[in-house]
Length: 367
Ligand SMILES: Cc1ncc(COP(=O)(O)O)c(C=O)c1O
Image 1 (tube, rainbow, N blue to C red):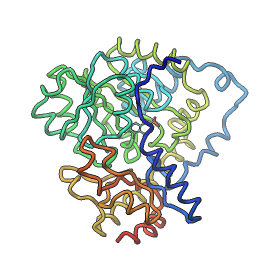
Image 2: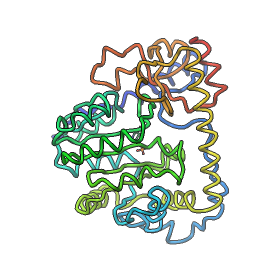
Image 3: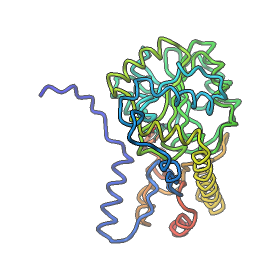
Image 4: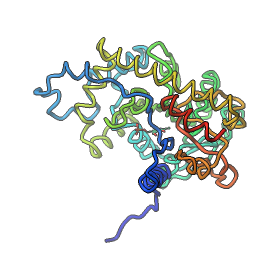
């Protein structure tokens, strides 16, 4: 067959996982799996929510519509945007990754500007769609030299992946405002933020002030439902949404109706809201304790957090992937998250969203 080969690679995260699981089977010793980007402190308790569903209805059994269910788009407008977003500018996507891919395809921009340390899949997606990758050193550099990113799509991810760093919100707004003055588009992809915030957070609503912003968000991290493959995409630009909707139609025919009903119930019912609150509370408190443990035991790579605070769900540890693996901990080398692959190989990204007791048990071996 004549294949349109893009040489896009399998994520390093998947490869590390395969290696750790193989070692686990061979040595018959359990590993602490910290290479993944999932919340693993607790599961969200869905039983009370699902018990109320009537599955024998069109709501569950028939095409949900390309843009997503109207009631879910309205609920997202209310819950994330303080009721200020027009639901017509929102699309339900099968996870954040689909929103990212649609955005890259939709814009004519041929270069994407990523943070200095970036999630490797951004670069792989760019490669798949034949878009070049550039990086920017910091939000401050976007504020000072926005024109350097002319004709590029700037990506902001906060708290970040791989560092889990939280930058001041005002810096984010300033950077977006400066880029808007230069007609530069910004993709805000911050799926980790909502674990630590709730409906009172005005971040999404504040972003509505800028015409150059595209928002990609996901329920994979904020409510721990990566298995349901659901997220959303927002843009003020009507043509952007119209084209994005066509891409969604021909790639998906709409997002799984069950996932949409589930998220709708989590956002709007008393039981759903309680389940989300409990999940976030336990998750955030274990993450905070794990980060404190790293700090108190000099394991955090502090040089990466000079203008920011480590918040989670990831943190960077000053040990190599191999050192950690020898101690039955899977992680991902920082070389995977930067264009300077050699420079940071003695540091690794770990997921800190695991039960504190397990974390301490394994990490004590590294102290
Ligand atoms: C920064 C970032 N954006 C987007 C995603 C996409 O997640 P999903 O497609 O599960 O929503 C991830 C997943 O790891 C991520 O880390």
